Amino acid sequence: MWADDAALDAAGRRLDEWESSLAERARRAQTLAGTIQGLTGTARSPDRTVEVTVDSAGLLIDLRLDERVRDHPAVSTAQQILATAQAARADLLTQLTAVTTAALGDDASAVIDSYRSRLTADDWRLATGDWRLATGDWRDDARR
Image (cartoon, rainbow, N blue to C red; front, side, top):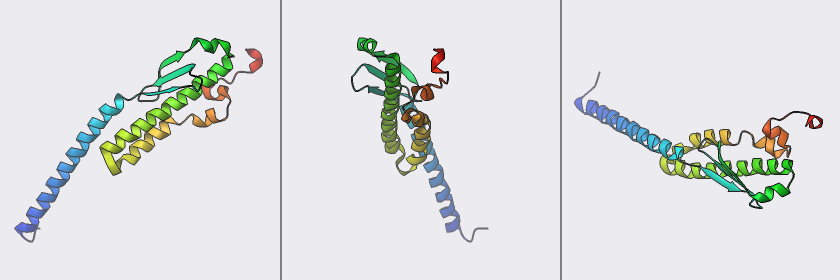
């Protein structure tokens, strides 16, 4: 099958390089997964009455409300919480993009795109300005 020993040796070296490359990629991916797991995103509302922190999956892990929120209607506070949570997810995505690009280089785009699609899935609902769409609350306002 092999014309000579040199061709066989060259094929063996290519396989060794390929195996080494795969092992290095697996190591980088494992390190990246650990780094991503520890990321959080945080944002504050413009008036600093709402602060939201999300975990690496974009889920709310901390919500801090200043006492001044009592001076605003509940609907306004709800909208501010949702918008601030969206900003916290954007902060998370910025961090995630930086660490993923540093770890994977040119191979980072698929990972980043996957996170972007998950972290921004509800953004279109928030863009409508209707907090009921974002929270899934479809009840008639008259029944509240």
